[in-house]
Length: 245
Image (cartoon, rainbow, N blue to C red):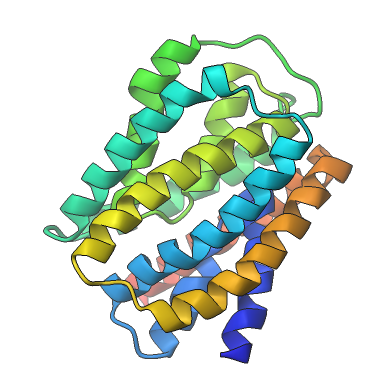
């Protein structure tokens, strides 16, 4: 369990900065003998600890505008639980084929877009339309499969709402937490969460999530941009290798 705790710290650090802790936790849990569905469910459980730590750190920094975030949270919870319900009944093969290419696109976008800065820009759509259409799409995917969801939220907040990198990261943590936890509840009620490995990883996530949020607050785009590019490419390569090899 000490190994899982240490892995949880690293996973939490990455998750708070750019998302993608599943890239670390999922293979680890499968290596420990969990089925893929158990690994997804338990990974969502351990992720919640690090997300809470990051959210608290960002809240203390005054980055969360709850009046604007509340509709996004509601949309994320509804879509995330729906995605998890379908996960327990359908195959994720189609998503596994598409997601690597979306992650590569995300990495390219974060590498070259001039909008990825510490300065806010003009939004391209309203918060209302963002809650009605963009959040449910990403949250439904998060509940169903989840790999890279934080990267997609982050890109959407920056590209469509014009948030700076610190604001986008803070809101990503909240909305991703909402969709992930709503999916976790569905999977837990169906008996797929294993508590002991989840708690060991989660304890590490608490530490890593808080530290990762601190790095975002201190360094902003200089830290988040390279981390999210590396994580996105890593997740894409991991999925492609598993699919074709």
